[in-house]
Image (cartoon, rainbow, N blue to C red; front, side, top):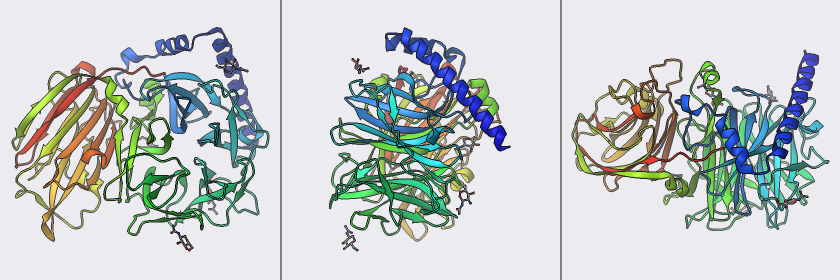
Length: 580
Ligand SMILES: *[C@@H]1O[C@H](CO)[C@@H](O)[C@H](O)[C@H]1NC(C)=O
Ligand SMILES: *[C@@H]1O[C@H](CO)[C@@H](O)[C@H](O)[C@H]1NC(C)=O
Ligand SMILES: *[C@@H]1O[C@H](CO)[C@@H](O)[C@H](O)[C@H]1NC(C)=O
Ligand SMILES: *[C@@H]1O[C@H](CO)[C@@H](O)[C@H](O)[C@H]1NC(C)=O
């Protein structure tokens, strides 16, 4: 068995090397990188594929997963990502690479990191970029060694004058961090190094995802020179019953402003965020807390829920996310991998699997108790043909079509106003799980105050639609207190039953008595990314309509509650971005 695996890998490696030789050969003939782009784009089966997106990041074909090493260098944004050059399922993973000047349009480059030395010969897995003092980027990533152990490696750009940083050189000292008998690190659960941060003692620190039995661990390493790393005696943080922590992300966030902070920032006006991706459930959660640099520990704020029933960036499909500090615009930007909800057969038919979410800026909410996310402002450049929805009363049981927008590729921003709360249903105290509540009370279940919201990617006969909506409940012990539920109901999203059509839900911490209830949905053929309460709750869904495709897709506003609500807002058709 071991023999077979190793010869299989040798074969893969050989073919990988061969295929890279070909790519390199091709690239050396193509002097203009935009020609390369055109050539790659023209091989896309775009015209016939109803699910290919118009403005989400994806390569022309094949499997992608985690975003890796996002950063900005000399005014150019870089995104690397886990990519299988050979197929639509996970395997043969390399770091594919694209760059952009606006985070919307992207040009592809050759793979930046691929198996080439013993410490990564069996795989180049996820990692993060750190910008060293003086501006030089350093890339730390997980390699799989000949014993199939997970180890941490370092690579630098070959030519710092090349703003595209097309070539990367691995340091000969690799691996820089490895499991040993002495350090007791689990060699099968030791991956995804974060961006490193510099302490006041001039030592670098980073964390690596791990577990011991079912305790999730953020293993802490320190270094004076970025080359020699020592494991700290204690993890930065850990939590029982979490299982493996993948793709940890640890960063500071300002308590007083919406400006993003460099990862090494700390001080009295700074909180810290720790996000982990749970391998057991394929969901992420984050906590907000305090980083005590003298003890080198992170302490989540009192009341933090440290499981996937806690705070999440996204209550739908969204995994292996990673932030970076955009020093050009002083903001922190979040990337996240959006997996398919189709069957593998569906993926084979499409010829691709996986997307990246629209990058989101993240800031701390006024309450200090959660983050708020919003699509990067640059996306608005794609908006065209604004259709305004003048303030309209949506009576109970009504449906209004939004005409004049390309409903399969659109950006919709509406706000609801409620003046009468009498008909709000009472929230049963046992309804603590918003996803289950949304599944029980889907869009077709009539209510008092709600469901009201949008029917996206809807067919004319409404047989297919993805409903993004609110329901407002009054709390049982305080009738003046309201609970806002946001749902994304995929149960009618496609006539094709092979897809995962799970309904998602989240509670949104807005006060509907004093605030308008906003809803923004980014609709892009097979994805609906929704932002409730101005970014306090986000839900991303993957859907595969069979009727509501391209020009046959419609957009509606609806209210299936008995109480009227007021709606106003705008919808835009979105232009297609130039992506890879
Ligand atoms: C480095 O990149 C710059 C800019 O692309 C280029 O002009 C130069 O020739 C490169 N140097 C080497 C050694 O490749
Ligand atoms: C180490 O990780 C592997 C892979 O998840 C797991 O099977 C094993 O139980 C782990 N060992 C310990 C001691 O946690
Ligand atoms: C960090 O921990 C030390 C030692 O317990 C304590 O004296 C200090 O106040 C803590 N600092 C912060 C910022 O919590
Ligand atoms: C991706 O989606 C498929 C289909 O819904 C599911 O079976 C799989 O577990 C998902 N994987 C991850 C990592 O989310």
